[in-house]
Length: 150
Image 1 (cartoon, helix red, strand yellow):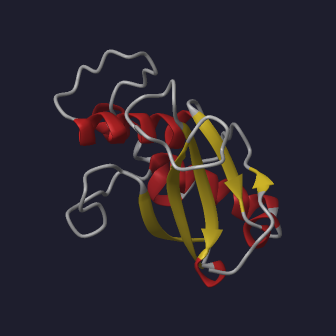
Image 2 (cartoon, helix red, strand yellow):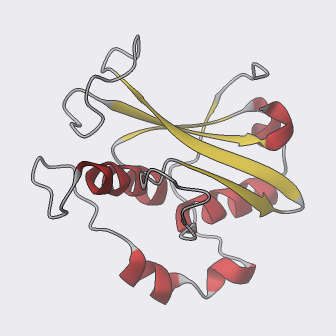
């Protein structure tokens, strides 16, 4: 994996384009409740991890979001399109999400192949988290990169 300097990811965006512009209704009923409390309305560990990952990806809550130097070097318009595509991604299936955790995807955005992934660290960001289900001991990091930076 090529080393790339991480840049802060924009916390909010208002730009929607193409396929994403009409997805609000579908996305709203497909999304899981965004809650960082210890109670999980969902039934199992993978679903709770998916819920926490979706919360970070969709609302920038519950972790850190970074972009690589390659993404940061793109135009503001392309970055906005990438932010929107990552936040509104909902096409998880057995091929791209075999563990049901909503932790990674590959997208085509603005003519570029984009990869996003979520990693789970301990609170000090020194080691992997002992329990990714527990926000009290886990720092989630969503990384957005161009495929050629992987």
